[in-house]
Length: 427
Ligand code: LFR
Image 1 (cartoon, rainbow, N blue to C red):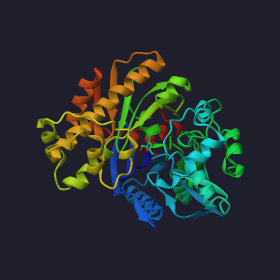
Image 2: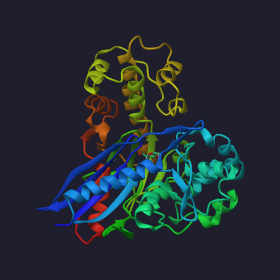
Image 3: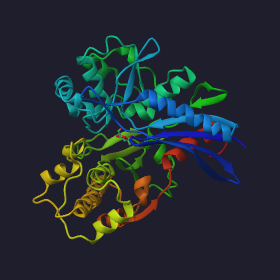
Image 4: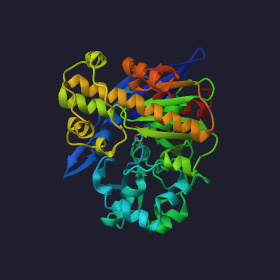
């Protein structure tokens, strides 16, 4: 029986999951898990890319011990971040997207091409960490002069395994430089910003085999984790989804990108999917609760946290997408700064975070329905956040949609399904 290995790395943890088809069903087994997180270096937030590579290799060793018959593997990670390369070697540090180094680059980019023009061309929502701003920050810092290419994080890790450089479409779209019309890097954007043309190669689609590692085929899945997550949702019909992890990515599949003024005003993204467009929005997600917990009650189990939050009476809301929540020194202080008065107890902060998230989902769905002209009945929630029954209930109440919460590793499933489809079996 053919076996497939998904290596799925998020901002706070990574996992190796082996999958195979048995009696027409997709079976999976997690064989390795490791922590991830940003590392502060010289006042900047960075990723320890060497440690990630070590974990990737160790996890493959573990997987091969149990399943020597693994036929292919693929890596997916969060989007937008990359490693600059020179002569086949990384140019470090590898910056993390929550670092504030893009602050001065953003206005300089928009002086040369307005955000509206960028949006009309790419359909990508404004986020201060989009690759376009990070690359421009590197240009201002003189880092691009010494580099000959850039690899997105999963491409870098697969390069280290196979020696093959690749440029995958779904993850490239997160950067804000891919044309919504052609699905390739937009030469006009590259030229206008004076970014090195040599960096921007033709994009490869999920399913492409790029090389080999110890006899295992290295294949591109939707290397953007959210792209794989949406593939992994067992959706009946075309319905709303939330991929709920550090971020909540809320959206719907559409046949084509929507880059009209309404979508721009609502700050919707059009990210590359596997044969469709993902019309979706980043909502701050579990990051809020995770940071509150590590600051206020790191030892407390999550079910106690949610049970207490449910009982309290603190009903003020915040706008969860306020930039104040992106990388605050203190998450508690960030909430205090946006509330008429601080909650009296710890549980009040969690209650506020969850209720505000549900309200953020409600507003996002209203925008989708208005901008697509469609009404949706159901909302699928996948990922770690789908385990939060309290939030699922609040979401159902706030949105009026029928919530189907599937606490599955949708990203790893999607990663594996793409490998199965392109390895000659029906997924
Ligand atoms: C989710 C995700 C989002 C992306 C954010 C930063 O893990 O990939 O889709 O906007 O991380 O890359």
